[in-house]
Image (cartoon, rainbow, N blue to C red; front, side):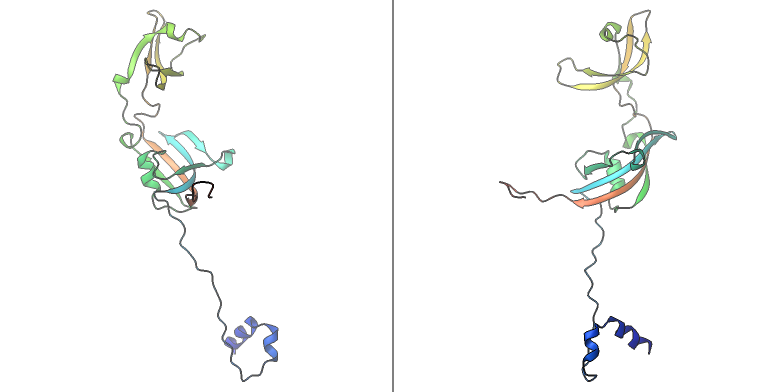
Length: 193
C-alpha cells in the first residue's frame, strides 16, 4: 500500500490515537507562485555588462571586478533606446548579447563636429597629444562637452578637436546579465512611506 504509506507520513502523531472510523483529508497548502518580474517601463533593473567594439573590451561592469551593478529605471532614457528594447521582457538571471549598429548607438561620426582651435587654449597642459580628452565649455558657458584631440599641428599652432561621442561610428556589442528586476518603491507625500 504505497499510497497509504505516503499519506501516513504526512499525518501528525496525534492522529494515530483517533478512531479508524474518522476519515482525514490532508491537503498540502502551497503559497501562490507568481511569475518572475519582467523588465518593462517603470521597473527598477539591475544589470552587469561587458561592452565590446570590434572585439575589444571597452568597458566592464561586473561583480568579478568589484563593481557595483548598474541600476536604472527602465524607460527613463538613461540607457540607449536600442539597449532598453533588447532588455524588454527579460527576467533576473537572464544573460544575453545585444549588438547595436552605429545608427542604434551613438550615430556615425560627423565631420562637422570637428574643428581647429588654437593650441594656446590648452596652455595649462604640458604636452598636448592626439587621443587626449578634455571637457570644453560652449562659448556661452552653458554647456560642457567632452572633446577629443584628433590632430596636433605644432608648426601652425593648432589642434583639431572632435566633439563626436567617442563611440560614434562603432558597432557596440553588450554582454548583459540581468541581476534583479523590481517594482518602483511606493512613494507617498507628507511623510508617508
